[in-house]
Image 1: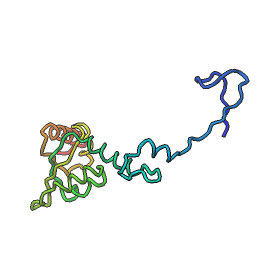
Image 2: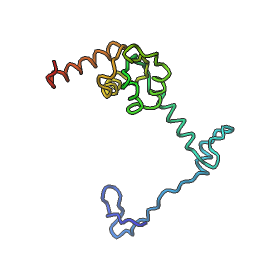
Image 3: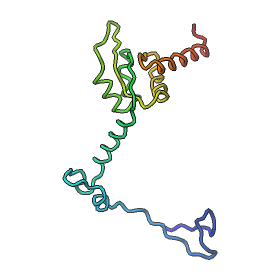
Image 4: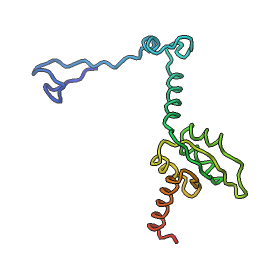
Length: 156
């Protein structure tokens, strides 16, 4: 592929009359990836395949994102929704920590959160299908948002 670059434009060009520059797409070089990332006996990089390493890295990264936790009550509908709105780390934590449902079908669970701000946005997606029990600051933030929404929409 060849691309013409106007001289001196955007720091790309050379001198007037310069020949077009040939642009080559980068080549995927599994052998170089394997040399750089191979971890010895793990076997992760057979034939230069880094996808298992990448999937593991992403899982570990997501797990490290969650620095705190929230205790919530989830309605039966809310119990099914984390799979739609949350990553697999949160879904697994809810599944592992969910207690038995009460007489109305609501379940108490503990879920990992990145921050209060992030959890506030995530839990708002569940609407009235979730009640935050702890931390108190997160509960207060959601209560203030719910009150504000009730004022806007004229709920009594």
